[in-house]
Length: 272
Image (cartoon, rainbow, N blue to C red; front, top):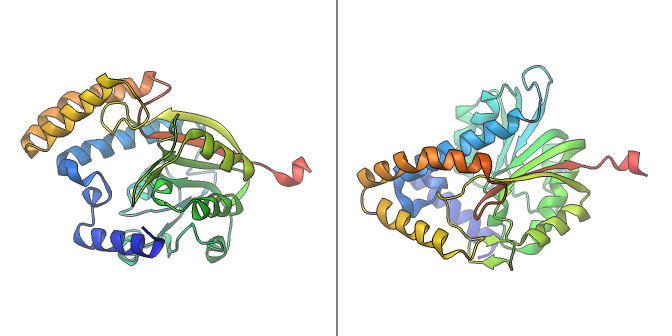
Protein backbone atom coordinates (compact mmCIF):
# COMPACT_ATOMS: atom_id res chain seq x y z
CA UNK A 1 0.00 0.00 0.00
CA UNK A 2 1.48 3.37 -1.03
CA UNK A 3 1.31 6.38 1.27
CA UNK A 4 -1.46 8.08 -0.75
CA UNK A 5 -3.69 5.02 -0.44
CA UNK A 6 -2.81 4.83 3.25
CA UNK A 7 -4.00 8.41 3.73
CA UNK A 8 -7.25 7.64 1.91
CA UNK A 9 -7.74 4.52 4.01
CA UNK A 10 -7.45 6.43 7.29
CA UNK A 11 -9.49 9.35 5.96
CA UNK A 12 -12.37 7.02 5.12
CA UNK A 13 -12.02 5.03 8.32
CA UNK A 14 -12.13 8.09 10.59
CA UNK A 15 -14.96 9.72 8.64
CA UNK A 16 -17.00 6.59 9.21
CA UNK A 17 -16.06 6.24 12.86
CA UNK A 18 -14.29 9.15 14.56
CA UNK A 19 -13.58 7.58 17.92
CA UNK A 20 -11.31 5.13 19.72
CA UNK A 21 -12.87 2.21 17.89
CA UNK A 22 -11.98 3.96 14.63
CA UNK A 23 -8.29 4.11 15.52
CA UNK A 24 -8.16 0.87 17.47
CA UNK A 25 -8.36 -2.87 16.80
CA UNK A 26 -11.61 -2.77 14.84
CA UNK A 27 -12.23 -6.50 14.66
CA UNK A 28 -12.46 -6.75 18.46
CA UNK A 29 -15.43 -4.43 18.98
CA UNK A 30 -16.04 -1.25 20.92
CA UNK A 31 -15.97 -2.61 24.47
CA UNK A 32 -12.65 -4.38 24.05
CA UNK A 33 -11.09 -1.30 22.46
CA UNK A 34 -12.30 0.84 25.35
CA UNK A 35 -10.40 -1.39 27.75
CA UNK A 36 -7.32 -1.44 25.54
CA UNK A 37 -7.25 2.34 25.71
CA UNK A 38 -7.74 2.21 29.48
CA UNK A 39 -4.58 0.10 29.63
CA UNK A 40 -2.76 2.55 27.37
CA UNK A 41 -3.82 5.42 29.62
CA UNK A 42 -2.60 3.75 32.81
CA UNK A 43 0.73 2.70 31.28
CA UNK A 44 1.31 6.15 29.78
CA UNK A 45 0.53 8.05 32.98
CA UNK A 46 2.70 5.69 35.04
CA UNK A 47 5.71 6.02 32.74
CA UNK A 48 5.38 9.79 32.40
CA UNK A 49 5.21 10.15 36.19
CA UNK A 50 8.65 8.52 36.35
CA UNK A 51 10.17 11.29 34.20
CA UNK A 52 9.94 13.75 37.09
CA UNK A 53 8.77 16.62 34.87
CA UNK A 54 6.45 19.31 36.18
CA UNK A 55 4.52 19.74 32.94
CA UNK A 56 2.36 22.60 34.19
CA UNK A 57 5.24 24.77 35.39
CA UNK A 58 8.14 23.76 33.16
CA UNK A 59 6.73 25.32 29.97
CA UNK A 60 7.19 22.02 28.12
CA UNK A 61 6.47 22.02 24.38
CA UNK A 62 4.92 18.72 23.27
CA UNK A 63 4.42 17.48 19.72
CA UNK A 64 2.08 14.52 19.22
CA UNK A 65 2.46 12.78 15.85
CA UNK A 66 -0.48 10.91 14.37
CA UNK A 67 -2.92 12.43 16.84
CA UNK A 68 -5.97 10.76 15.29
CA UNK A 69 -8.94 11.28 17.62
CA UNK A 70 -6.80 13.11 20.19
CA UNK A 71 -6.39 10.37 22.81
CA UNK A 72 -2.78 11.25 23.64
CA UNK A 73 -3.38 14.97 23.22
CA UNK A 74 -5.92 14.60 26.02
CA UNK A 75 -3.45 12.66 28.15
CA UNK A 76 -0.77 15.33 27.71
CA UNK A 77 -3.31 17.95 28.78
CA UNK A 78 -4.26 15.84 31.81
CA UNK A 79 -0.59 15.83 32.81
CA UNK A 80 -0.67 19.63 32.75
CA UNK A 81 1.11 20.30 29.46
CA UNK A 82 -0.03 23.64 28.08
CA UNK A 83 1.84 23.90 24.80
CA UNK A 84 0.71 20.92 22.71
CA UNK A 85 0.93 20.64 18.94
CA UNK A 86 -0.62 17.74 17.04
CA UNK A 87 -0.30 16.35 13.53
CA UNK A 88 -2.18 13.85 11.42
CA UNK A 89 -2.20 12.77 7.78
CA UNK A 90 -6.00 13.10 7.54
CA UNK A 91 -8.16 16.17 7.06
CA UNK A 92 -10.96 14.78 9.23
CA UNK A 93 -8.66 14.32 12.23
CA UNK A 94 -7.11 17.77 12.02
CA UNK A 95 -10.47 19.51 11.59
CA UNK A 96 -11.99 17.67 14.55
CA UNK A 97 -8.96 18.23 16.76
CA UNK A 98 -8.94 21.96 16.05
CA UNK A 99 -12.56 22.05 17.19
CA UNK A 100 -11.95 19.88 20.26
CA UNK A 101 -8.80 21.71 21.40
CA UNK A 102 -9.03 25.31 20.10
CA UNK A 103 -6.15 26.53 22.27
CA UNK A 104 -3.71 24.11 20.62
CA UNK A 105 -2.25 23.90 17.11
CA UNK A 106 -2.85 21.04 14.68
CA UNK A 107 -1.26 20.47 11.29
CA UNK A 108 -2.04 18.08 8.48
CA UNK A 109 1.24 16.46 7.47
CA UNK A 110 2.93 13.12 6.95
CA UNK A 111 5.96 12.79 9.19
CA UNK A 112 7.48 10.47 6.56
CA UNK A 113 7.80 13.31 4.04
CA UNK A 114 11.40 14.43 3.69
CA UNK A 115 10.74 18.04 4.70
CA UNK A 116 7.77 17.56 7.04
CA UNK A 117 9.68 19.23 9.88
CA UNK A 118 9.71 22.54 7.99
CA UNK A 119 5.92 22.84 8.28
CA UNK A 120 6.01 23.20 12.06
CA UNK A 121 8.69 25.87 12.26
CA UNK A 122 9.85 25.23 15.82
CA UNK A 123 11.46 22.65 18.08
CA UNK A 124 9.93 20.68 20.93
CA UNK A 125 10.92 19.31 24.32
CA UNK A 126 8.94 16.08 23.88
CA UNK A 127 7.63 14.27 20.81
CA UNK A 128 5.21 11.37 21.06
CA UNK A 129 4.15 8.92 18.35
CA UNK A 130 1.94 6.13 19.68
CA UNK A 131 0.74 3.33 17.40
CA UNK A 132 1.84 5.38 14.39
CA UNK A 133 5.27 4.51 13.05
CA UNK A 134 4.49 0.88 12.23
CA UNK A 135 1.88 2.18 9.78
CA UNK A 136 4.69 3.69 7.69
CA UNK A 137 5.25 0.69 5.46
CA UNK A 138 7.96 2.19 3.23
CA UNK A 139 11.37 1.88 4.90
CA UNK A 140 12.72 5.07 3.36
CA UNK A 141 9.78 7.07 4.64
CA UNK A 142 10.20 5.42 8.04
CA UNK A 143 13.81 6.61 8.14
CA UNK A 144 12.64 10.07 7.03
CA UNK A 145 10.18 10.08 9.92
CA UNK A 146 12.87 9.36 12.52
CA UNK A 147 15.16 11.96 10.92
CA UNK A 148 12.35 14.55 11.01
CA UNK A 149 11.61 13.77 14.63
CA UNK A 150 15.24 14.35 15.59
CA UNK A 151 15.21 17.65 13.64
CA UNK A 152 12.11 18.74 15.56
CA UNK A 153 13.51 17.95 19.01
CA UNK A 154 15.53 20.31 21.14
CA UNK A 155 18.94 18.95 22.21
CA UNK A 156 18.30 16.52 25.03
CA UNK A 157 14.60 16.30 24.14
CA UNK A 158 12.57 13.13 24.62
CA UNK A 159 11.08 10.96 21.89
CA UNK A 160 8.38 8.61 23.24
CA UNK A 161 6.71 6.09 20.98
CA UNK A 162 5.22 2.62 20.74
CA UNK A 163 6.02 -0.27 18.42
CA UNK A 164 6.27 -4.05 18.51
CA UNK A 165 10.12 -4.21 18.57
CA UNK A 166 10.32 -7.77 17.28
CA UNK A 167 13.15 -10.04 18.37
CA UNK A 168 12.91 -11.78 15.01
CA UNK A 169 12.54 -10.66 11.41
CA UNK A 170 10.13 -7.86 10.57
CA UNK A 171 6.52 -8.77 9.75
CA UNK A 172 5.03 -6.90 6.79
CA UNK A 173 1.46 -6.42 5.63
CA UNK A 174 -0.27 -3.89 3.38
CA UNK A 175 -0.96 -1.39 6.17
CA UNK A 176 1.57 -2.23 8.86
CA UNK A 177 5.19 -3.23 9.34
CA UNK A 178 6.23 -4.61 12.71
CA UNK A 179 9.97 -3.97 12.48
CA UNK A 180 12.61 -5.87 14.36
CA UNK A 181 14.17 -4.33 17.43
CA UNK A 182 17.59 -4.42 15.76
CA UNK A 183 16.32 -2.44 12.75
CA UNK A 184 14.66 0.17 14.92
CA UNK A 185 17.71 0.51 17.16
CA UNK A 186 19.94 0.98 14.11
CA UNK A 187 17.77 3.77 12.69
CA UNK A 188 17.61 5.47 16.08
CA UNK A 189 21.39 5.33 16.55
CA UNK A 190 21.98 6.69 13.05
CA UNK A 191 19.77 9.63 13.95
CA UNK A 192 21.52 10.41 17.23
CA UNK A 193 19.01 8.96 19.70
CA UNK A 194 19.94 7.31 22.98
CA UNK A 195 17.48 4.65 24.16
CA UNK A 196 16.56 5.22 27.80
CA UNK A 197 13.76 2.72 28.41
CA UNK A 198 11.64 0.06 26.70
CA UNK A 199 8.72 -1.50 28.57
CA UNK A 200 5.51 -3.42 27.68
CA UNK A 201 2.20 -1.69 27.09
CA UNK A 202 0.35 -5.01 26.77
CA UNK A 203 0.97 -8.62 27.76
CA UNK A 204 -2.28 -10.52 27.19
CA UNK A 205 -4.65 -8.00 25.65
CA UNK A 206 -2.93 -7.37 22.31
CA UNK A 207 -1.69 -9.67 19.54
CA UNK A 208 1.46 -11.54 20.74
CA UNK A 209 3.48 -10.90 17.59
CA UNK A 210 6.83 -11.03 19.38
CA UNK A 211 6.71 -14.53 20.82
CA UNK A 212 6.76 -18.15 19.74
CA UNK A 213 5.21 -19.36 22.99
CA UNK A 214 2.17 -21.42 22.07
CA UNK A 215 0.43 -20.69 25.37
CA UNK A 216 0.35 -16.94 24.70
CA UNK A 217 -0.92 -17.49 21.17
CA UNK A 218 -3.61 -19.84 22.49
CA UNK A 219 -4.69 -17.27 25.09
CA UNK A 220 -4.92 -14.58 22.40
CA UNK A 221 -6.98 -16.87 20.15
CA UNK A 222 -9.35 -17.58 23.04
CA UNK A 223 -9.69 -13.89 23.87
CA UNK A 224 -10.40 -12.80 20.31
CA UNK A 225 -12.91 -15.59 19.76
CA UNK A 226 -14.75 -14.71 22.97
CA UNK A 227 -14.91 -10.93 22.51
CA UNK A 228 -16.11 -11.28 18.92
CA UNK A 229 -19.07 -13.34 20.14
CA UNK A 230 -20.89 -10.34 21.63
CA UNK A 231 -20.28 -7.01 23.36
CA UNK A 232 -21.67 -8.53 26.57
CA UNK A 233 -19.10 -11.31 26.43
CA UNK A 234 -16.41 -8.73 25.69
CA UNK A 235 -17.39 -6.86 28.86
CA UNK A 236 -17.05 -10.02 30.95
CA UNK A 237 -13.66 -10.86 29.41
CA UNK A 238 -12.37 -7.31 29.87
CA UNK A 239 -13.52 -7.17 33.49
CA UNK A 240 -11.43 -10.27 34.17
CA UNK A 241 -8.40 -9.29 32.09
CA UNK A 242 -8.08 -5.61 33.00
CA UNK A 243 -6.63 -5.98 36.54
CA UNK A 244 -4.47 -8.89 35.39
CA UNK A 245 -3.04 -6.83 32.55
CA UNK A 246 -2.27 -3.87 34.80
CA UNK A 247 -0.38 -6.17 37.16
CA UNK A 248 1.53 -7.90 34.37
CA UNK A 249 2.68 -4.71 32.61
CA UNK A 250 3.90 -3.38 35.96
CA UNK A 251 6.17 -6.35 36.69
CA UNK A 252 7.22 -7.77 33.31
CA UNK A 253 10.06 -5.99 31.53
CA UNK A 254 10.00 -7.81 28.18
CA UNK A 255 6.59 -8.19 26.56
CA UNK A 256 5.20 -10.21 23.63
CA UNK A 257 3.31 -7.30 22.09
CA UNK A 258 3.33 -3.51 21.83
CA UNK A 259 5.92 -1.73 23.96
CA UNK A 260 6.76 1.86 24.79
CA UNK A 261 10.23 3.23 24.12
CA UNK A 262 11.67 6.45 25.52
CA UNK A 263 14.69 8.00 23.78
CA UNK A 264 16.75 11.13 24.28
CA UNK A 265 18.14 13.20 21.42
CA UNK A 266 21.85 13.91 21.46
CA UNK A 267 23.24 17.39 21.89
CA UNK A 268 25.38 17.40 18.77
CA UNK A 269 27.06 20.71 19.59
CA UNK A 270 28.13 19.42 22.97
CA UNK A 271 29.43 16.17 21.48
CA UNK A 272 31.47 17.87 18.74
